[in-house]
Image (cartoon, rainbow over all chains, first blue to last red; front, side, top):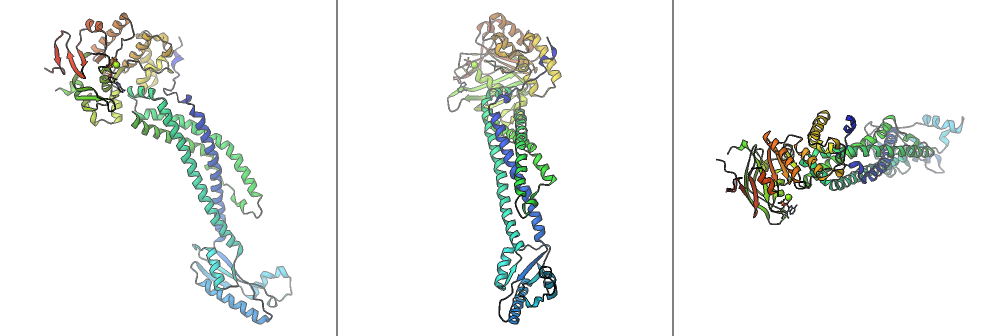
Length: 304
Length: 238
Ligand SMILES: Nc1ncnc2c1ncn2[C@@H]1O[C@H](COP(=O)(O)OP(=O)(O)OP(=O)(O)O)[C@@H](O)[C@H]1O
Ligand SMILES: [Mg+2]
C-alpha cells in the first residue's frame, strides 16, 4: 500500500460542492465589473475636478458691455459709471483681494491683434474689462456672484468660461456622489448575497458541523473553512469581473476623448488610479472572506 | 465532595425538548474519575438525552451541572469546545462523514485541535491497524460493513485519548463476538484511566462484565450495583 496515498486531505465541509458557488462567483464578477467601471468614473471625475478647480482658482475677469447711445461721450461715461458700480460691488465681496480695471492702453493691447494697427479704440464701443484677484482660499459661489453682480451693475457679466466651469464642477460633484452611492450599494448587495448563501450552506451542512462541534471544533474552525472558500470565490470572481471591466473602461475613455472642447480629456486615469482598480480582486476577496467568516460565527451562535 | 475526582456532577438536572414534558427530572449524579458504568433503560427512557448532556451537545433545562470541574452555567462557547476535546463519543448512529475517507474520519478530533499532519498520520494509521481497518483507510464509510463503521466510530472516539468516553449502544449492530471484542477495548481504555459510560440494551454484556449500572426509569436515575443491591439516586460517596 502506498504510504503517500492518504496525505491528501479533503475538506470536512464539502463547500466546493455547494451549488451556490457558481452563482456567487457570477454575482461577484458582475459586482466587481460594475464597481470597477463606477470607480474609474469616480477617479477620473476627481482628476477632472482637480484640474477644473485649479483653473478656476486665482483670478477672474468681469466684462462691462458698452452702453449704446448716439452721443458717444455720454455712452462712454455711462459705461464707465457701470464699471465703477461693478468695482464698488466687487471690492466688498469676501474672497476678492484686488479689483483692477484695465486702462485704455491695456484694452488696446488686448484688442489690437484682432483689429489691426491704426484703430482708435476710444471711438469704438468696446467692452471694458476688470481683472479680479481672488484669495487663495476663496470659496466663491460663482453662480450667485454672477447674479448679484448683474443686479449691482446691469451691464457687468462674469467671465463665461469660469461660470460654466463652476456649474460643471457642481454637476460633477453630484455625479460623484451618485457614483459613490452605487459603489456602496454594490458592496451591500454582494455582502447580502454572501450572507444568505452562507447561511443556506450552514443549514445544508448542519450534520457535519454538529459532528465537528462534538469533536471540540470551535466556531472559528468552521468559520475559517467558509472564509477560505469565499476568499477563493471572491478573488476569482474579482479577476473575472476585472477582465471584462478593463476593456470597457478603455472603450468609455476613448468615447470621452472624442468629445469636443477637451474638457473630458482631462479625465484620464493616473497610475495610482489604475493601481486601485487592479487591486479590486483583493478587495472583493477580503469582503467575501470577512462577510462569510462573521456570518458563520454569528449564525452558529444561534444555531447550535 | 472531592470535586477533582468527579468527571461529571449533576444536581437536580432536568431536560426537556422545546415546551414538552421533562424527559429526565431531578437527576443527581457524581461520576468518579476512572469509573466504568453501563447506562440502561427502556427505549425512550432518555439514555441518549443523558449522554448528550454529558458530551455537551445539550444544556440541561434546569439544575446544575459541572464537567471536569467546570460549572456549565459559567462556561462560554470556546471553553465548551475545549471541554469537548477531552470527551470521546460513539454515537448510536455513528455519525461518520461519508465524503471523507475512514482515515480522515478518525483524524477529525486531532485536526480540529490543530495537531500537525505528521503526528496525525502516525497516530491514525497506528490506531486503524490496531482495530484491523488499515486496509480500509482510504474507503468511504459508505462502503463499509456495520461492524467496520462501528470500529471507525470507536477509533474516532478514542484517537484523542479522551478522559471521558461515552458510547451510545456501541454494540447495537454487531454480533456477540464483535461486541465482546469491542467491550474488551473499552475495558482496556478504562484500565488506562479513561472514565467510561456505555449505554446498552444487552443483558448479556451487563451480566458478562460486572460494572455498576445507571438505570433510567420514570424520568429518574438509579444506580444498580452488580451484586443486585439498589442504591437510589446517586453514587454513595462513602
Ligand atoms: N430532539 C428531540 N426532540 C424532541 N424530543 C426528543 C428529542 N430527542 C429525544 N426526544 C424524546 O426524549 C425521550 C428520550 O429519548 P432518548 O433518545 O433519550 O431515549 P433513549 O433512551 O436513548 O432511547 P433508545 O434506547 O431508543 O435510543 C423520548 O421520548 C424522545 O421522544
Ligand atoms: Mg438512544
